[in-house]
Amino acid sequence: MIESALDKMAESILSLDEASLSGLLDKYKRKMEHFDTTREWEKSVIIFFIINSVRVKNHIFNENILTLHHKRDPQETPPKKKPDLKLVK
Image (cartoon, rainbow, N blue to C red; front, side, top):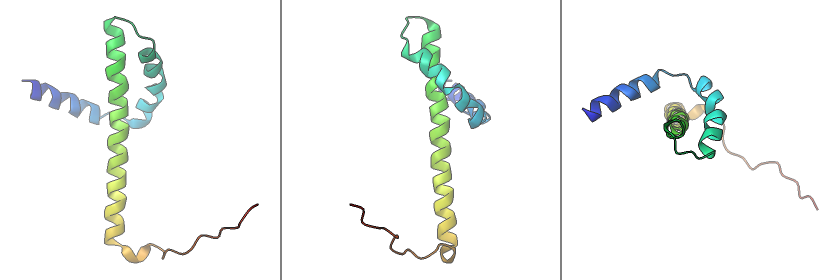
């Protein structure tokens, strides 16, 4: 029963847009930082971490997609060379 409820929540969260969620991050961070013993404060903490979870999931996903892309097309990556650096005193 709990797993089913979590699965449904995850399915709903996956349908949310990261850009829209990120716009709400500061709002819920401020609410979370002002501790209160109310249910609203508890929900703000959960919402804050849900938003961050979506952001982390997308970051990990994008990194892995890039890694897979580079493994498939190794000739597309330019050869590494020494950076053009100057000594500044």
